[in-house]
Length: 306
Ligand code: CP
Ligand code: NVA
Image 1 (cartoon, rainbow, N blue to C red):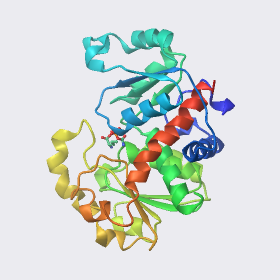
Image 2 (cartoon, helix red, strand yellow; image 1 turned 45 degrees about the horizontal axis):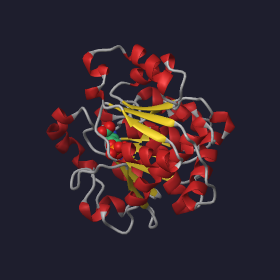
Image 3 (cartoon, rainbow, N blue to C red; image 1 turned 90 degrees about the vertical axis):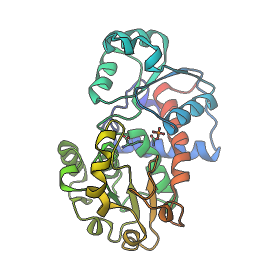
Image 4 (cartoon, rainbow, N blue to C red; image 1 turned 90 degrees about the horizontal axis):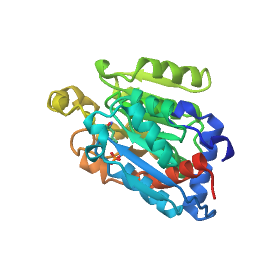
């Protein structure tokens, strides 16, 4: 997709609604083997946090396009010894064609984007996880045929996933409902951004009532109650979040054809029960697979095909 070439993806708001739809279309074509694109470029992965899906799906996507991947483990590069990110960014810019960064602070991504000319991809930050939501939208589209008018209920912590789902759903004309404990709501400015995108067309609900959010929804989504970096508060969060567990009782209030999604990794019997995760409504493995197809579409669009 020509309009995306050379751009950064720090947030879903960096894309237009049409660009999201075009990326999803390309991802579906790549998955079906209807197109076979090549991109002989080099992707860097600079991840300050653990990752299974994002690291492997980005790597396999790049290899399948004919490109190469360099894993820039922060512990063995000079960033862990205090080299400024602005300097690291300017150097990596001279070697790599594209860089995916997983970081604690959205500002780090902005620093990379400012000092490097190559495309910078947000591979998860405190503020969002746009690549995950691209895969989520692809999965929902596969299940329901289209996205407009589908209602997604996210139940749990108002974290990076809640932020990106708010933006992604609003941009594609879905209704989005977020149920969290009052003190754990998504970022207020992102809620406002999603409401502005949705306008009068679609619903953006922020509530502390999980049953109200789930009522009649076609997609039930959850994520961990304590994200990476919040491990110290994990035990204290359990009783606060218990009413927000995705279990069979909560699921019974959703649409009879509802699907259940989780970005993974999951903590079974915390935010989701084993029965729901392994049950007939779960689409979590298709969702995980779709990371690779969605990111392949993203890589080839940001870099351009050979
Ligand atoms: N969902 C997701 O981003 O998984 P990883 O942390 O394993 O990359
Ligand atoms: N909210 C989780 C998502 C992991 C993919 C975290 O940031 O740890």
